[in-house]
Length: 196
Picture: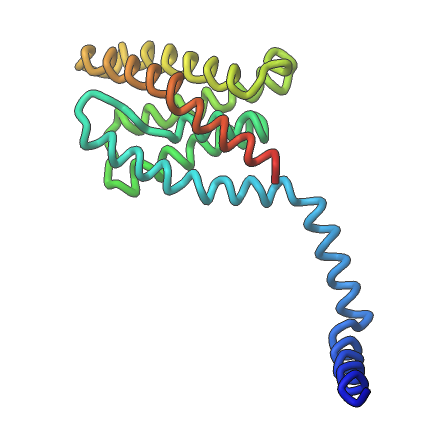
C-alpha cells in the first residue's frame, strides 16, 4: 500500500510538472504544424539522402571513362514527380551542382549537363502539373523523363562537345543504367516515401 501511494504521488508530481497548459498548447501547435508541413519535411529528408548519393555517383562517374552513373537526374525526376516543376528544377540544379562541385569538377560540359537536367525537371513537372502526364505511374514518368533528358542532352552536346563518341556513349550508358537499374531503386524510394 505504501509503495502504491508513493508511486501515485511521484506520478502526480510528474504530471503537474510537465503537463501544463503551456506545454499542451505547444504540443498541439507543433502537431498542427507537423501535419501542415509534413510533406515538406519528408521532401527535406529525401534531399538529405539525395545529396550524398549525387556526390558519390558523380565521383564514381569521374573514375569510369565515357560512362555516366550519376544519379542527380534520377533524384530530380523523383522530386519533380512528388513536388512539381519549380522544386524539380531547383532539385536538378542543386543536386547536380553539389555533385560536381563537391568533387571539384567544374568543367563546362558537366555544368551544362546540370542545366539540361534542371530544365528537364521543370519541363516534366510542367507537363505533369498540366495533365499531360497526370495518369502516369512514377515508373513510367521516370523512364519518359530519362529518355527526354538524354535526347535533349544529346542534341545540346552535338553543338558543344568536340568528342561525339563520348556524347553517344554517355547518353547510351545513362539511358541503359537508369531505365534498368536506377528505375528500380528510385521506385523503391518512391514507395517508401509514400508509406511514411
